[in-house]
Image (tube, rainbow over all chains, first blue to last red; front, side, top):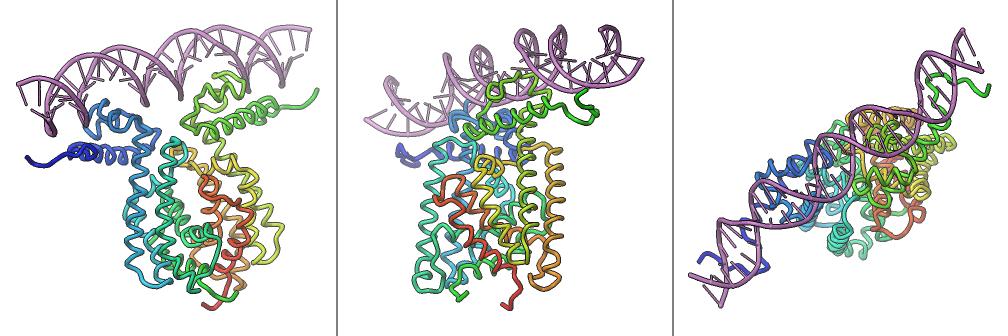
Length: 205
Length: 205
DNA sequence: TCAGTTACTAGAACAAGATTCTAGGAGTCG
DNA sequence: CGACTCCTAGAATCTTGTTCTAGTAACTGA
């Protein structure tokens, strides 16, 4: 009497379980690295059976892939939300940089995990990731397109924008996450935001 | 009568074997990913026994770490060589970007491997890497220091230079290696070299 | 040249841990 | 209720990383 269950919908308990497994997996991966964690570790942390793990994810690799894809998706959604709250070319470009830094600092464990992998994944997972990225980038370009058209931003090969805008903050965050740099991204993001804007704004020389 | 063998020196055959193992490992890793390759795969590809592998490297992880460290070292040496052939601030900054792109295109498999890991390594390997990076960065800063002192380049927090200069080309290469972008780095490097120079040269606003 | 010593190699034995399989619960729909 | 699907358990299995013992080859110093 509570709710209809279309066959495509997952049961609430299922969603719950999957999430608890991914949470547990992230904890384990953060503590011991992906190779260092065993199925048993995840199983104990998530308080479920081996069978359950394999029913939902198929393999240890499957858990790692799902966590990765879920993480990327969350990041992308957040970025698009932030972007849509921005107005104007300069503010939008800078918003991308700032969001990257803020999100990474707020979700340190997940950010660290997202930086570590994506190679070693199955072809299927790689294809899914590529599709997710394609959709995301299409939305981002739709957002910035008008600014290029209006001449506020330089017209460049499409593949140049992401590296120019996000490259520096991304590299900074990567090194910060792996312990090379001390100061958190928040302390540096304005510097990188300015640089990003400088590199894509329209301007003679 | 041929040569003296100080105890610290390795025999020629040993060097040979180690190199052949690392070569074989890179091939295997490239084809199947690190997790996907077994000790047996490497052993067959390098045409040696399991015992030999463990004698030289201690573990599968040890092979992966050694390959990584060796690769980073090669890259660093090449970069410093290139840098020392450059003259002036602008040329030097641009040389860094160009070398990054050129080297990655020339050593695609190795570059791809170097982008994939460094997490999941032993504490010891991480410490060695940190030390290698420290030394490398010290040399690079020694090179650029005078240009900052003379006012040709902006004075910034030290941790900002690498991300600003290398971040964009690095991000481009990463995506190119994982198949998101089509055009090889060589086609884009001048664009990124210009951007790098713009972001660190001294200049009012 | 030869005993002593060290560096290296082989491959069988072992252990850890990833995956599979069978036997059920527990909701859900007709 | 009875058929059906989704999900969970945990023992059994199989893969694969690692260890161990017994060597062989190369070098050293006398």
